[in-house]
Image: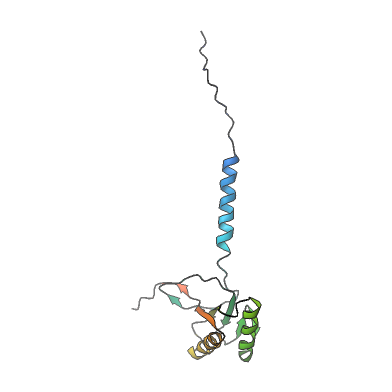
Length: 138
């Protein structure tokens, strides 16, 4: 006497829901990875207790040997204002843009303040790039 089940179970596994999840994860990681745009120049940034990621449109880098770069392009100290004005106008943010300063921690403060003042005079928000870290003093 052979007992047979009235309900037959299909042994095939549907992969359609798994591929949907994989594509959603892929889209999520692609979108979140574009928010972080590291500077291509080797600069030793200062550390801060709280470090926020800012969507940068314009990047100004000052290296340890006082070389200036605007969006990773070499610039002279005297051309910073005209280059920032051009970049702010090109991004369509002439009323209020965001300028991220990547300043090496060995650079004297006067150079940083000068560039920050130029950006502020052009109605741009100035943000300092830092590395997250513990700043406890011993």
